[in-house]
Length: 148
Image 1 (cartoon, rainbow, N blue to C red):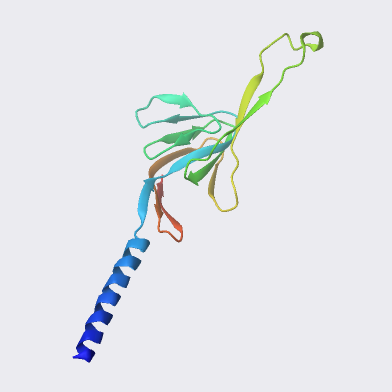
Image 2 (cartoon, rainbow, N blue to C red):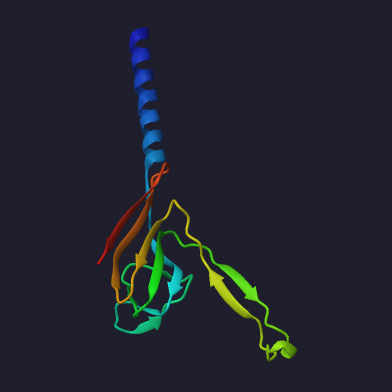
């Protein structure tokens, strides 16, 4: 009788432990983004409807977008989650130094790190983002990416 109770309690504990491990290992998928971290020259993007918009640093694009670089242009994209922007305020020169009293200009920068997936688009290049999903498994992030 004691052997049966021990076997049943061991089986119940094993089942509960298996459920806990399965719940912890369950992954969540999120929409990934291609964030522009560097732009030299001019580039544009479309949401797949052939309406083109200028591309800017810090802009995040998802699946279904098409990016095109102009001649002598380059674009660096970081694939993954959205990257926070850093807003830099540049103060103009005083009017007596040739600043003409213009309001301060705002520039944005975004920085990539070594752990991120970076794509560099060269001049006269077209890139379509067909699929970009990020799955967080709890231990690591796995990306499912399709580019054309």
